[in-house]
Image (tube, rainbow, N blue to C red; front, side):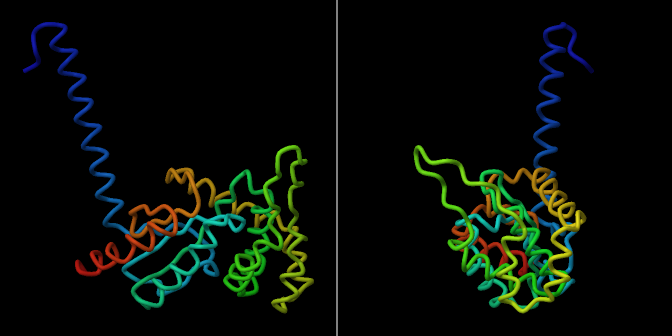
Length: 223
């Protein structure tokens, strides 16, 4: 039965909306924490067994220094859990990193030749060589990078250069990166690197290192 007075009815309605919102958030959190979040991504940007019970989705920017520090923890998790973990890499180039987008294009073009992870590791290892430093006070803003800037790195890996250079001009590569960004925006990714381990968010290499193992162990105990 509804309350009789108008004020009581408004208070009752507001309480009902608030309760529904709380229940909705709790249900969403429960869903995200239990179910693997496995977005669309090219197979070359994935490592591990397709049916692995633990799915780690990484949103990263190849020009991001913090993302570089996350490479080692991810490799360690893959080594510890072997076939129980799968990693899916998603591009999330930040606007302030002017070479991040072309680096993502180059990495995916290497991926078409089965060498995504090789270029991924090389670009992080040599990040200081290609990523322009932030301008100091009074200095001009660096110019945006170009996918062609990464041709020397592709040569270093021994890639098929005509195929690689042709791929750099393929608009479908950028479309995949745009899709990654939209996916990240939908998941409220605000910084890089951001990880989702079966739906649970971990921001940065430190959170991943300190919280990733306990969370994965908890997931596997339920299997």
